[in-house]
Length: 79
Image 1 (cartoon, rainbow, N blue to C red):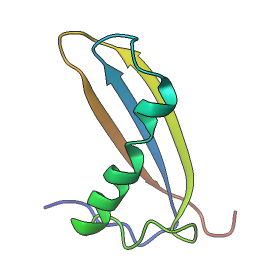
Image 2 (tube, one colour; image 1 turned 90 degrees about the vertical axis):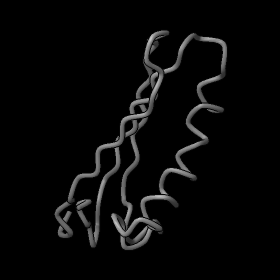
Image 3 (cartoon, rainbow, N blue to C red; image 1 turned 45 degrees about the vertical axis):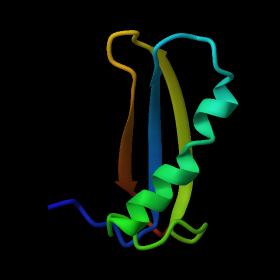
Image 4 (cartoon, rainbow, N blue to C red; image 1 turned 30 degrees about the vertical axis):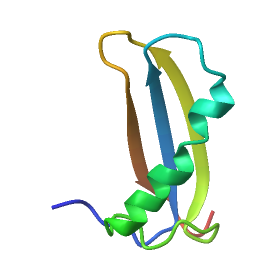
């Protein structure tokens, strides 16, 4: 099954586009829908600021295999 995170977590996104035509902020806007999907799937308990404490975006180009890769990492709540 899918991993489950109760939070707090940090989430990294690697956005791999087929070309450089779209503005990066438009590409990364999709994180809202990805996070909502992770909550709906039960991977994240919640996507509010108490649970998702950090977000990071990176961008690459791969015309043969555009995709988004998501990494969820537990964060020490004492930090």
